Each structure stands twice: as structure tokens, then as C-alpha cells.
Length: 221
Ligand SMILES: O=C(O)c1cccc(C(=O)CC[C@H]2O[C@@H](n3cnc4c(=O)[nH]cnc43)[C@H](O)[C@@H]2O)c1
Image 1 (tube, protein in one colour):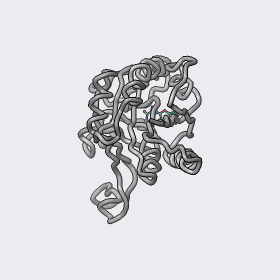
Image 2 (tube, helix red, strand yellow; image 1 turned 135 degrees about the horizontal axis):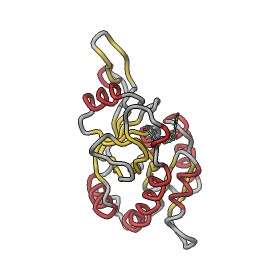
Image 3 (tube, protein in one colour; image 1 turned 60 degrees about the horizontal axis):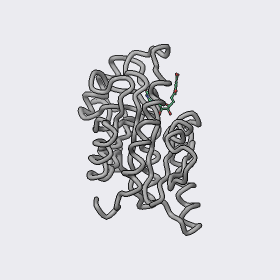
Image 4 (cartoon, helix red, strand yellow; image 1 turned 90 degrees about the horizontal axis):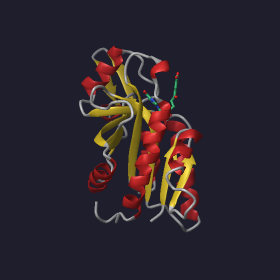
């Protein structure tokens, strides 16, 4: 079982690495960049490189900190995606936002394997729900409410999951997204972000999650 974990920034990558100590692991870590496009390019490159070397990945995990919708996803808690949905890929119309799928193009959602999500949530204590991918961090109550109206199952937002999932799908590799909540989705208050607590939660989660991922049989989907 070969696993690729893609974070956005090095501090998130290092938080995941802290879960492994110095022993051998089947997990490779990648700081893939902030935003969906950077994450997609970096992840696709890593997947292609591994495949060409004859050692393809079996699973990709998009991981890092994220905003949590309140009160369902409190600061310091974990959210595991049962759906990875891009929230702002579409068109503004006189009737409001229309996703690209309703315009006849592409996809807006990738779905991680059900059984693996259930098992991973049980071992980490993560809540399961939709994790939105956005290009702009939400900064107002109005935008948060609009996202909740359009995505009633959303528990968290971040900026990379959909890009990582697009790359994984192009390679036929299953994907997970795990977010540790560093801030509420809503009015911007950068001083209230609890990044340290979220990174600690990410480390603890990977300590519990990795044995589950390593023993997962991809045919149990
Ligand atoms: O403070 C800012 O202005 C700012 C603007 C863009 C990005 C950031 C980050 O620190 C984001 C880093 C990383 O964290 C994820 N993240 C964390 N909270 C949220 C959120 O509420 N909404 C979306 N993304 C979030 C994201 O995946 C970034 O990669 C700060």
C-alpha cells in the first residue's frame, strides 16, 4: 500500500510527519502549494512520477487546516470529507450562482470510498461531511450562509481538496480529505485562528489514521 499525503504548506506537512517518528512508513508527504491549481499540478506530477517508476500510489490524502462551519465543526475538531466539492466553479447569473455541471461541463464533486471514510472517522473521531474547496477564504456571515444554503452537508472549507481529488481521479486513485479546524467559516478575524491547535490535532489524527490506511484493501470500496 503506497499512500501520498498532500498538504498545502510545509508546516502542515511537518505536522503530519510528526505522527510517524523515525520508523519506516509507506506514506510519502508533499507540500503541494496553496490553492486548487497548485495542489492539482503538484499531486498529478507526484502520481505520474511514481507510476512511471513502477511504484504507483494506491491512495491520496488531501490534508491540512481548514475553516469549520459553526457550530457543527468547532475549532480543533477534525472533519473527514464524504464529499469533496468545489464551491465556486461556475457562473454568476441573474438567478444566482450556477455550478459548471449545470452548464454541461465537468464535475464539482469527488466521493472518497464510503467504507474507508467510516473506518477513518471511527478511529480519529472526525466528523464526516462535505468539505468545500474555495478560491477565496470566506470572510463574512453572508457568504458563510450562502455556502450553507447551497451545500447543506458542508462542515468545512479549505482551498486544495478538489484539486488533489481531480489529480487522483485522473490517475484512477481513490482520495480522502482530512481537515483540522483552525478557524470558523465566517466574519474574518485572523487573530482568532488557532493554527497551532489544529496542527496538533492533525498530528494526533495521522497517528491513529495511518495504520487504518496502510491496512485498507482498495477492493473493499
Ligand atoms: O489570512 C489570510 O488572508 C489568508 C489568505 C489565504 C490563505 C490563508 C491561509 O492561511 C490558508 C492556508 C491554508 O489553510 C486552509 N484554510 C484554513 N482556514 C481556511 C478557511 O477558513 N477557508 C479556506 N481555507 C482555509 C487552506 O486550505 C489553505 O491552504 C490565509
